[in-house]
Amino acid sequence: MQPEGDIVLVVDDSPDALGFITHALEEAGIDVLVATSGEAALQIAVEIVPDVILMDAVMPGLDGFETCRRLKALPGLGHAPVIFMTALTDTEHVVHALESGGVDYLTKPINLEELRARMRVHLALARQTRSARVALDAAGRHLMAFAASGTCHWATPQASRLIEQPGMPGDAQALISQRIRNWLGARTVATGETSSLLLSPGLTIHLTYLGLIGTDEHLFRLITEGEANQEEALRQHFRLTARESEVLLWIARGKSNRDIAAVLSLSPRTVNKHLEQIYTKLGVENRATAAVKAMQVLNP
Image (cartoon, rainbow, N blue to C red; front, side, top):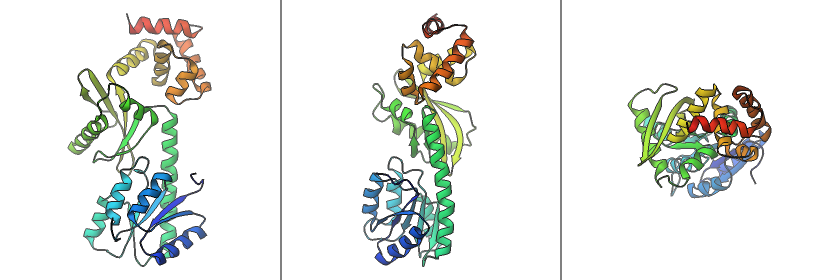
């Protein structure tokens, strides 16, 4: 079971170093997980997602750099900051640490005051990131965050369902990642820009850039061609908000309030609030009439 407090995963092949760091962090009220190898770190991270990872750079077997790359590829781990601990202070080693996904580094031997100070900063940032992701998940949008390299940091449940639904090619996420990498690598992308991607004959997905929300963390909204056209048609015709047009589209498809709440990850109460606004704007008193009016727009 996931602990409720801040969690730091410490990865070091030295038992003495693990004991020293663990004691210091636990005294600061932090839950500590320990791994004596890169392989062990990967196994632990699959079960319990840490908020911050302290990574020894030089270890037998998987070194810290390769372990970091593999951790970042795991679902839910893309956002977790990795701080390297290393006695290698040459520029090339620091660059190597950053290129493998690290955000910071501590020089060995570790200074406890510096360790605690950096932990406070990175844990605070991790909490902000976690809160933002929860809020985005709750918003019920098809959202994905990517690094400029095309690596997917995370996706809302709705986005994951979208690219895994029947009819989508098996390499849909790889195709999306490639488009993101090429798009961000070519030039500076302005917030609100949209790029269309043909995944297979008759299946186009639109990627809208929503901006930079973290260190090398670019947020995109995904929407299919047909859904985009239908939502926009309802939005413009009835002067709805984007969320109201989504709800109305699902009403037109015959979904109940409970179904809509589940699909969009909203509470039933929130769906009812949107319905009140929709009824007012459409000049109707019930969902049946709202559905009829929506279908008249969608199928003129």
